[in-house]
Image (cartoon, rainbow, N blue to C red; front, side, top):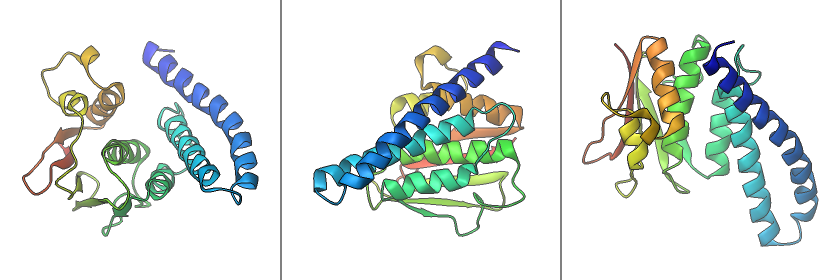
Length: 194
């Protein structure tokens, strides 16, 4: 097993173990949620954490994921009260292969980290080989470590690890990922075939 495969396997296993215990906490919180707003907010946080662990467990799975990443990423957006517009059904296309699904869902996850409730993430493109993922709210920005990760001439130990993983995953599938902001759309990530 290569060092990368071992690292992915380890990350997936850690997420799996944490998710199992988190589910037990979630069931207890659901019983208490009817009593207070604080408990309902705690439950929402636990649900979001559980979804995030499921997302990463499936992202790093070596032999394919056990759940649809697109379903999980849409559930994460819903838990964060973010709207995802995928009018071309690019993210949920039945013909999309495993790596492309991981790359696109990973890019949506990165974008969602900069969003707040009621923000809208748009997914557009001709097909899964030229896709733009954007947020139209002018007040949102990607963190600099994310932007730096998609540059070509960077020292990889100084930037976001997940973004670097996506960049390498895309390259292995003949795709490129770039941050491509505009004045109207400061958060804009393009995934395209080289």
